[in-house]
Length: 175
Image (cartoon, rainbow, N blue to C red; front, side, top):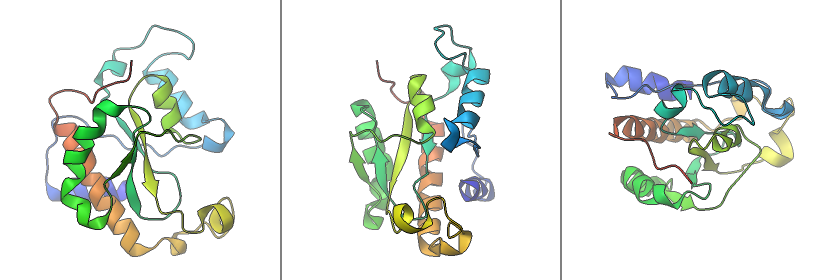
């Protein structure tokens, strides 16, 4: 995600909306980092009153399943965003990054945003050996990240978040 931001800045693009990057701590400890952020900026869990900043957030894009290439997006049950993501990802179809599934996936920080009814999406990725070799081991190191995959991921996600930031309105939210 840091490379995503570098690409956007280096391109000289000036998005209409602010694009933020978040590097969370404590995901494996019940989303401590993302939950603290959400409570500070959106409102306390189990309370119905939301802070004004809540209304400004269009979407949350999360990439947290290892080092593999992006293959698409989990729509998290939000069918209304399908045509939007189809159009945004169509130029990258030759990279096989435009697979969309209505399915939910969980156990990543997008769950926190989903709880607040902010469209939170997890990127679908090649698993590589994430669950069997690198996940939570000393092999989970930068040297294991395929350079080509990282370049594809950063470029496509930069285009995706820039396009979201250019929209006149927020992405559709689930009821």
